[in-house]
Length: 287
Image (tube, rainbow, N blue to C red; front, side, top):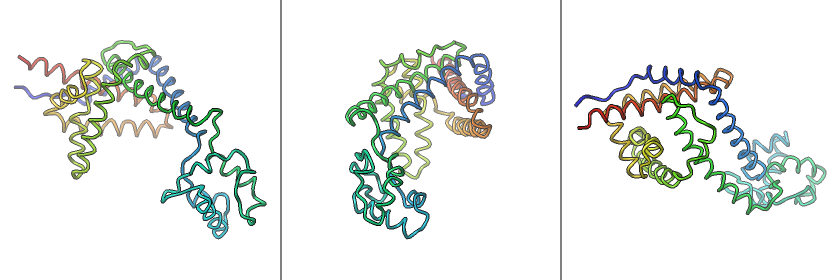
């Protein structure tokens, strides 16, 4: 039985060729994804929360003693809590400076303190229940978009022009992809708990499950098994290929970030190309 193999240079060259050919539609897809991420990010930012460190407080009060006093007051008032000093609901629910509980020593800085704390408060125009509903909805959409990106990568690798609608048209695969993703994550996590190396092996061996779900409509377990079979004998090659893609994207990041507009689609297409290349070799080898 012939050993499976692929050319890293050929895969990246193909990725570059297809990115160049379809850059217009690729740029549109990246733009849509960016807008979606910005909207999700702004929603979370305006929902407040997070944590407040002593270093953060020192931006408000430069004098260490004053900063420490105010920091201890935040803890005493249950505005922040725990080792990570996570912002509590009491602080998030404050709507104006008058609602702040402050000792006499800080009374003269009420507005200044509120301006400092305001980014940690809830500032959305609807109740938190609506925010939580939107978070779940956006998470589901983001997972569907991730499935769409896998499909777009396959289409571009096969010299097929995708449409922006491909990002949102794969909802029927959501449950399969989610279950496979959970199983994949648990396997990799378990591997990392076993001295890291098994986690890397599981990540490589099972990492192509998404292609089988999108391309072959396989179920969660079936897709993971298919990925394990497909990557058998080439996992070391895939490890170095993944490292090469990381270096490629670091290079894109260093090119004033703009380079990522090219390196990310090149990586996406090159990875899909490797999937197709390995799968074609499996089909040839099958009786």
